[in-house]
Image 1 (cartoon, rainbow, N blue to C red):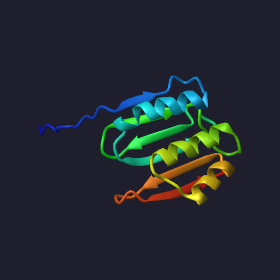
Image 2: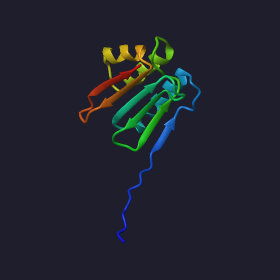
Image 3: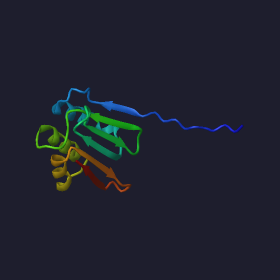
Length: 120
C-alpha cells in the first residue's frame, strides 16, 4: 500500500462583520488591505450577504465585504469602486459594469492586469 501525502492549506478569512454598511466595509478594508498581498480574483455578487470576495494570489487570504455591491447606481456599488481604486484599479469600463451588472468577476493575470467577466 502506498501512502499519499496530501497538502493541506489553511485559508484565513477576514470579514467586515456583516453589518452591510458601506462605511464600515471601507474602513475595515483600508485597515486590513496590507494583509491581502497580490490579488488573484474579485467576485462581486449583489445577491450575497458578503457581496464582495477578494482572493489573494500570494497569501492564503480571503476578504469578505458586506457593505459593497453592484448592479445599480448607489452607495454600495460606489463602495466597490472605492475598493478597486484602493487596489490601484482605475478602469472606466469596470466601473460602468459594476453599476450595471448584478454579478461581476475580475480575474488578475500574473502581471496584475485585470480581466472582467460580468453576468446578468
